[in-house]
Amino acid sequence: MTSKRRVVITGFGVITPCGNGWEPYWDAALHGRSLIRSSEPLKLNCPSFKYAGMLSQFEPKEFIGNRKSIKLMSREIQMAVAASGLALKDAHLSPESYDPTRIGVTLGTGIINNDLDEIGVGFRNGLDENGHFSMTKFGQDGIRSLFPLWFLKYLPNMPACHISVAYQLRGPNNTITTSSAASTQAIGEAYRVIERGDADIMLAGGTDSKLNAMGISRFQLLGLLSKREESPEKVYCPFDKKHDGIVLGEGAGILVLESFESAKKRGANIYSEVAGYGSSSDFNYDPRDTDDFTGKRVAIRRALEDAALEPADVDVLVANGSGIPQEDIQESLAVHSFYASTFKKLHVTAVKPVTGNLVYATGSIEAVVAALTTKKGQVPPVTNLESPDPECSLPFVKDKAKSCQVNVAVLNTFGFGGQNASLVFKKC
Image 1 (cartoon, rainbow, N blue to C red):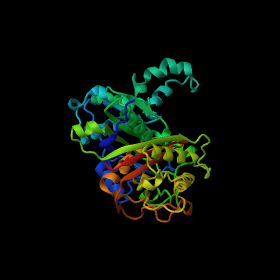
Image 2: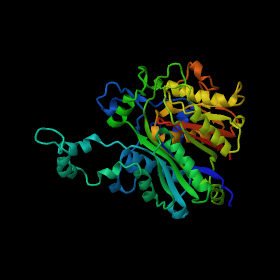
Image 3: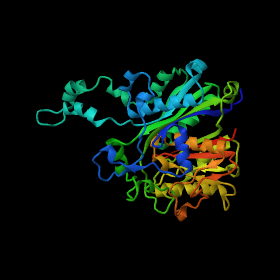
């Protein structure tokens, strides 16, 4: 039986409302600066949807060399391909520097929402003489009026597919579709691929944009969006007494995971080591049930066991911090269950208010924060945490970043469907 290989992070690619690249995102997180703004520029004609974390500096043509392929890409695909390019550049990897059969992709993404203007043409041409939708007429006339390859823009596996084509990655290729846990699980599964020797390098992370009519409507129907009305940068406040739901954002995050041997051989800059991964499911998940934190606890415990660590070894927790009151309480209960009466050296942060909740991509950019805390010894504050909810009494980093020795950081990401994932990062 071969021993498990060590896995390290050698590159970051980040596309967020903070800008392009990991540096502006890290700077915003360190300063507790929220990039959530008025959603008016989206022109969605939805009065109840007031705030969002929108990209302001993203131009696909700057990142995607094959311009013809852009028309085959949804926004999620464009962001994923761009973030992958940034990650490879940050890791100093080019097609000439790796064996294409030993580098692959694992990506977290989910339902890619159709552009209503695009698909609307097909539905309009599927109406019968009485103005009623006819499946027969849609099949005969509606489908023909659509762009012939339109469906390829919206399949969940297409972002990973386009990444592999754009950068000549012929190794393992997989897509994880588990709500907000997806990109964290993608990193965990890529870690396993390298650990067992099936690849030397993996691009892993996630991409998502719910800033469209279909995406927003789902969260509104579930009652998960914040209804608070104040300055946009203050509205999203996990763990605070005022938390009342999420604020949606968009973006993509890609990490370059690499075997320790490969990274050392080529003299790569190592940000952190991925030391443990755990996942679980809340089979009876209900965000209104404040007592059900079993699955969250299991994910954290499994990640620590995988890393051969104890809770007392953890210096930093990058919490899920969704901003949904019941979820914040559940996570706090899960963390408390490991520590009894004292937290000793633990520092807790949460960074979703910086960009908004990126849903399927959220774990990937928050993994960047977790990894960088071990590299730089700085812990960002919980943005907008002014008066912590008494039921969420954790040792939060408040007001400003904290400098300290960080040897071990844990990331929690919990999905809206009950999927849970945790990762352990170690200073390397």
